[in-house]
Image 1 (cartoon, rainbow, N blue to C red):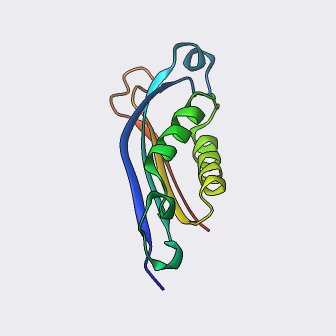
Image 2 (tube, rainbow, N blue to C red):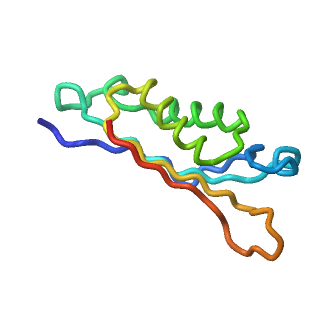
Length: 120
């Protein structure tokens, strides 16, 4: 059996309206996503785009879902993993992190984020 292949999308930036607080949902924020989707190639080889997880389709999926506000980033990463797996059933493992780049807390100088991993 062939090993896992991983498709990675790193440092994707999106403007979106996720957040627990009303002000976050009004003003929005900048988010960064890192995604790794690992899968087993059919027949142990990849000879065309249909044999892989198309990163352009992954990006389009993320872009669409980021425009649907959620109160919690934890909810968002878990839902994204399930949507990706449904779209690419050959997926064996997903690692996704979302970072909120401008945290709405007075005198907060860093970022806040959530990381999620799931094996199928």
